[in-house]
Amino acid sequence: MEEASAALLMSIAGTEWIIIILLGLVLLFGTKKLPQFSRSMGKAMGEFEKARIMFKREMEEAADPLRSVSRIPKITGPVATEREKLETIANSLGIGGYAGMTDEQLRTLISKRIAS
Image 1 (cartoon, helix red, strand yellow):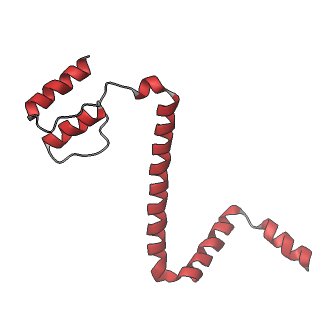
Image 2 (cartoon, rainbow, N blue to C red; image 1 turned 45 degrees about the horizontal axis):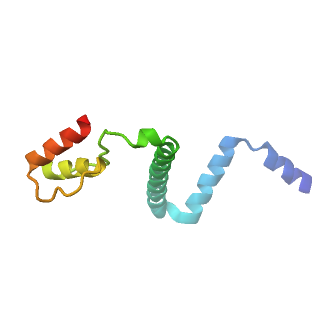
Image 3 (cartoon, one colour; image 1 turned 60 degrees about the horizontal axis):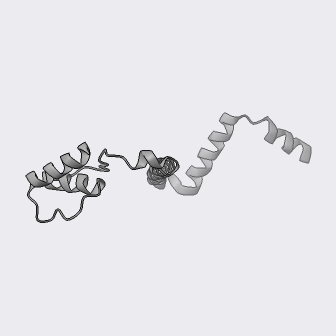
């Protein structure tokens, strides 16, 4: 009897296992909770992928210190205003003390820093 059940388990192919797992999920979570569960799993996988890419980028920058000290500004996301964009670029270039400057003065300072 035990040999028959072991033989049955061994003869099930990959596709059948997927079907069995999906049926188990439907029984476990129910048909109303399954879409919510799928959404949360998708979000979790997206966050994991984002963290993996960020970790990989940081490891590459740490491995190559010459490339990480770049004159190219690093902007990581969208900005709402022109001033915010200038401040983000100034921060990425290591420029400080720009609070009292006009936008044009800050642009000039950024241009000089990039050109040097």
